[in-house]
Amino acid sequence: MSEASPQDRRTQRILHGSLPLEVLRFGAPLALGMGLQTTFNLVDAYIIARLPPDVSGPALGAIGICDQLAALGTIVSYGISVAAASLVSRAWGAGDASDARRIAWQSSLLVLGLGLVLALVGGLGARALLEGVIGVKGQVVERGADYLTVVMGGGVTMFLMLHCASLLRAVGSSKTPMALLVLGNVLNFLFAVLFVYGPGDAPGFLSWGPPLARALGIPRLELFGAGVATLLARAVILLPLLFFAAKRLGFLRVRPALSPDKPALVELLRLAWPSSAELVVRMCAMLLTHALVARAFTTATDQSATTALGIVFRFETMALFISIGWGSAVQTFVGQNLGAHAVRRAKHSGYWAALYNLVMMALLALAYVAFATPIVSFFDAAPQVLGIARSYLSWVAPSYVALGVGIVLGSVMQGAGAPQRALILDASVVVFVQVPASLLVLLSPAPQLTQVWLVVGLSYVALAVTLLASYKRGRFLRAALA
Image (cartoon, rainbow, N blue to C red):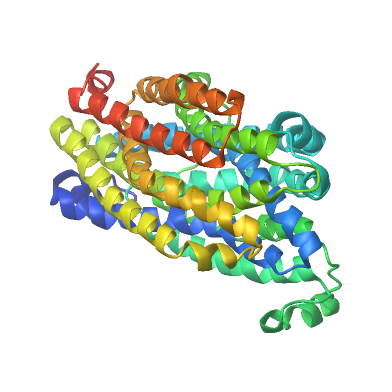
């Protein structure tokens, strides 16, 4: 049987293997791979933190906000990838490789088009987004505008990279994307040293960078250079990802219909917009916290709170992406098992993925709380920044367990073809819990940062309770059975 055949050994394991073992074996590499993806940003923050203090402080604040803004585009694109993976996995589980290829190609056209549109938005509106929407001030704006331009302008590389990884995952391949993400992080580190420091000063253990940058004619670009490095690293690993996705789906043997297929695009958009919107809601909740802190707890000369959030939100993004990794893995089980009419197995796979992610989030939260001081100091050891960051992690990190459960169960609903339900539940928590509570803090006579942290933690718990209650009822499966 050929490698591209829907009934190969990997598909058989997903449909008939020991469910706890197969979910763990398939999901762990994806979760780790998604966690590694966030280290693109952690590497940038680490290297930026080694610049002179008058540069590194504002730059760290800027990079935290800019990466969240850029992530909105990535999340919209990822919604298309989630929808495509759901449809591809069902077709693959039902034995229809031709339909899987058709969906994969049409979804790739959508992702490419979105990347070009958002490149224009980032190129023209970076400063307006930072000043007008988020409300950041001073040097954070000055240093962040150029960085945001390059990361949004080149975001299409990230979109296509995650899309190819999603397509590979949908047909049962999870290890190849993880290996390439590891390689991408190594390249990102090397490129960042060259483009951030250029031929200028660098920390002692990175002293190999300036001579090489000088020989290659690379200037010192500081924060902007971090964006350039990330863009180049993603572009390099995108090429092999494209090849492996094409090979696994059979595109190397069968040429697809190149023209857009309107019915297929409409179906993809119908499933994609709620998936994208749900993740946008989740990221907007983080931006809401950033905006609240920036407006109530910073000044033009003191952005310590913004800098601290820029650091801890990188850790939180890792928790979010690991959860998305488990959610992506279980979508493959849900899609392929629903395609094979194994509804009970599809639902139970969600419980196992949520359990594994719960354990991983508990360990991650424990590490964040226990080692908050050395972890944060690794990026910025300023006492005020360190104090704010430690406070946030001690209050919020334990609630990552709840956040992870909510993300995974919502992903199962998406994979079952009920993304609207997941969107409504997630948005309801933000609109009816987090936003009103945040406004109460902002309008209180003497707002405290710990009050903001409490709001964030409670909203994560509310998300888990809401999603779990809906999941247990199982009504979302009606979309799959219709």
